[in-house]
Length: 359
Ligand SMILES: Cc1cc2nc3c(=O)[nH]c(=O)nc-3n(C[C@H](O)[C@H](O)[C@H](O)COP(=O)(O)O)c2cc1C
Image (cartoon, protein in one colour):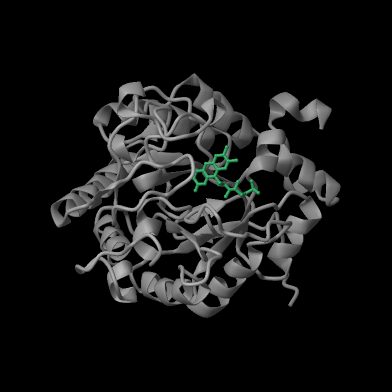
């Protein structure tokens, strides 16, 4: 069904207004030392804010050092992380984009080398660390370390780390919070029966497997202001029989809505190395559509959305409330400026005055 809403319609979520429906999904830059953002991040995110994106979700930012995917990941486990983050956040905002952040724990996929150094698990002797997960099952392939099975006390500790991370993100000026519960990282590991074999209250039944995320959501909700968007990224399916799937996602999202979650960022996969994923343009859009229709939540669609007309159609057809442009935004930081021109509505997306004469 066509609607009057289009790619350049504003989107209001709580008290935050996005200038358009185009966001950048979280994308690790693996360029921090000790989790601290630096000039790379200021330039990288700043350029894309100037390029017209409505929302910029800063990369997976670890709530504790062991929760980093690689030693170069961003972190938010200490007050020292606030000021460098605030610098990037302020600049994003000065360019008219809304600054968001994804807070994360990498679970059994932590302690890996930088992608451009192969991405395999690092031995502790080579800068790696001991990893943790719901169950002591290795991810496999290059990520062969066997994680330590979290105790209840350790689970509680990590949940407190998420809460502290959310508080610090707020102090740094972030206006949009996303919990990372996708791609085979810790929270997703709890959700999926393939990685969660626990027999206590955090494993087994659907109610038990969602408990980690649900409790974390509730605890963060208590410190994250009501007036700011509170969102979660999910892998809506493992793409593997017997794994986490869309029906469980829908059941979970109905509960999350009641907990005050505003939007679901609908991704898939990442939990099973051998999964057969039908990757192609729009391959995850139907998940955003289903969650939006059946759960009464806003959704973001992501995954191989590269063309302006393609993105516009997703919004006009009401399949999602916004689109996130990942790799294509790495190729073209001015994607929204270009999209407005190719869709014949340049007035919707004026360039920054410094660039006005060339657009
Ligand atoms: C370099 C890179 C880093 C990424 N880092 C993250 C991340 O920090 N958190 C996350 O949830 N997804 C991450 N992703 C996945 C993207 O957010 C996105 O879901 C994925 O690239 C699919 O969208 P695309 O086809 O538009 O690139 C990353 C992807 C890339 C290419």
